[in-house]
Amino acid sequence: MIDWTRVNDLRFEIGEDGFPEVVELFLEEVEEVMARLLSAGDAADEDLHFLKGSALNLGFAELARLCDTGTGTVADLAACYDQSKAEFLAKAGLLAA
Image 1 (cartoon, rainbow, N blue to C red):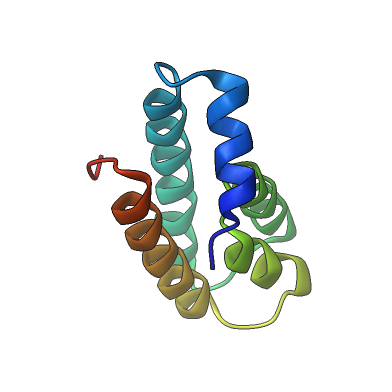
Image 2: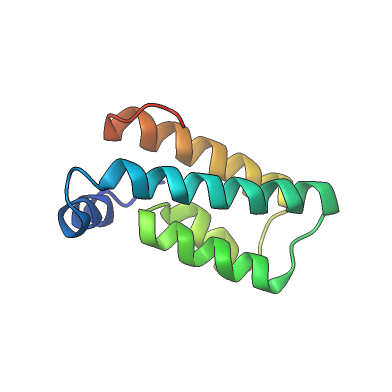
């Protein structure tokens, strides 16, 4: 579900001090889009593109795949995001934002 190689690369690129801030920003932006999608009941192409890019940047590989293929419902995207976030936060040693 998580591309840990990408996570480690990003942590190295940004630096240990800046990494939590980038994660917090990512989570805030994605959660805003996810809330909008859940409210609307469907996903516009620009939202899927944004989610895919954000997911790839932070290593949320399965979420990026779902956005890329356009398979699944908004509920599927939200469930995948929630699972990815929980795994990421637990294994990356970060507290939930």
